[in-house]
Image (cartoon, rainbow, N blue to C red; front, side):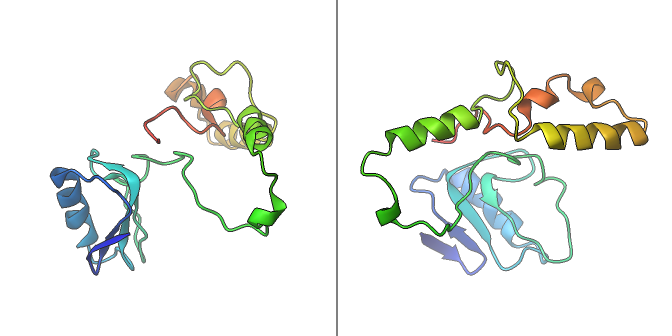
Length: 153
């Protein structure tokens, strides 16, 4: 991790100058708190740096929401330790790959079971609001719950 300044941290091993400048500009906003963090895949985006974590206090940044939302990148501490894992991680990896679609939806042929309840909930909410989500994007059901197909490693 590199501390660029008090409001900007970077985990990117390679960072283009224009990407860093975009992140510096965003990090100066008074509601960004406590700092903006650049992930290993950070790159220049439209409105906000793609591959960044931008926590805010008392504000929502529409330009940041949607730039990289749902990219599938997350770090979570679990109860498991290295000793709980098998020496060969191939089977675990393959189970994860079977359970979580890896494309942006265009080539998905089925909706994963974990997404089905949320899809039903969203369809009910949309109907109550008089909105047809398929009119905005016909493939949204196949995209929900996937890891996307972008540039993440």
